[in-house]
Image 1 (cartoon, rainbow, N blue to C red):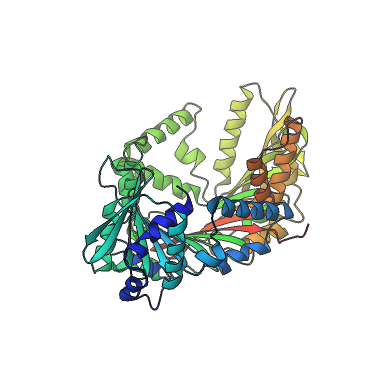
Image 2 (image 1 turned 60 degrees about the horizontal axis):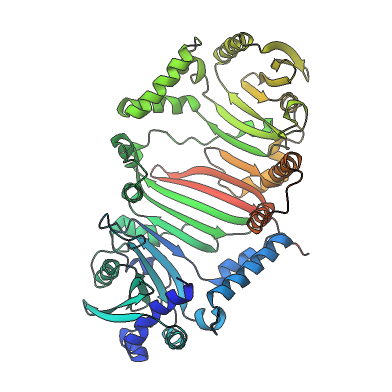
Length: 549
């Protein structure tokens, strides 16, 4: 169904209800166009609600970003969308929709039966900014759109309009400043009940705080609220026949997360995404410890991707404890222990036990040696307080490699001792050594070994791209995810040119995807904590400033 047809069905109620007299009688003065206001007509049993801003000032912030190619594609897409939406119509968004169409909230209600029609548990709430502009628009649509049969249903002092058009049924009602629409009657009835005083998302204690508390986002364009995270996951699983029911141990772990809210905003460097989870502190076994971030300086500025963190050994201990009440997890850990035992290694002591400091996984571009076909190599760095155990484990792995036709030889690179694994006829594909007294590195590809031991200057934490991304994120955090999109796209494009040189011109969808990716400067993400009951995941997508053709 077209967007124009959807609006026509939704605004039918205005005409059925008696036009201006109906609107005036319902009192439309003092419109509050906020998530908290819309939540007042959302039943408290809703498992999720999404709020989409129609404020052009927020969306217009995107206009200062993007390459000429992306700007052209976006403009063409918007023109095509408007042309298709209002085809054979005199409707204009600026003149006919913008004056009355406020922000939109879509709520997901629990499915009432296995036979429920897809999307029948969705409730759409549209804020009406201007009642007279809406009446004008409704009259205009009445002359342009041929709608199907309509019937009126009286419910709790309100009129619900049932519209049957092209085999689809919609129900709509006006609740003072909000237009509510659903494909099922029950959600609209529940919305009326909430408006009349029954429990809503805006009236339920801590849940109501989800909608009233600020997320500290500049120019927010979308927000999503999950009042009960466990109920939400169970509802999603129940609505997907292909997904097996969650085991009891998993459900118990989910109980730690009480509610979640997510937001998207547009700020000075790009697009920011933030997720705030309210948790039960007593159920969270991992204690938040700010990551020192010292390990970042051991990577060269050419690094195109990095993931940092700390305390792998602590995480392993917690996972082992959780496995005692989770049979599936226990089975997986037992398989891992058996595999390690087969090569005379103890997982708890020889592998994870010494990983008690910071760690980082990096991807670095290189077209030399064994890395020439793919254009990049990888490296992982561990900081440890138990160098002896870590070295003993590596020595044992060296012996195992030698027994499997791999040449293992000590050598010196940049004046430092390194052990290299070489495949005859192919070259060195792995090397490991120590960057300092407590920092072990394992690198894929000889060029990466050399880069890690070259005492990088400048280092990654001095690169402009990394600074731009990480300065936009909380300083106190548990580690970073970082991606340099320019370097990544260079590697991707070189790989495609070398592997498929005769590929024809990309199709429009591929061109759009490439234009979007080429407009991204970098991506960063991190996890932090306001207090023991509030965990925050924040991601920033830095965009290239707008340039002229």
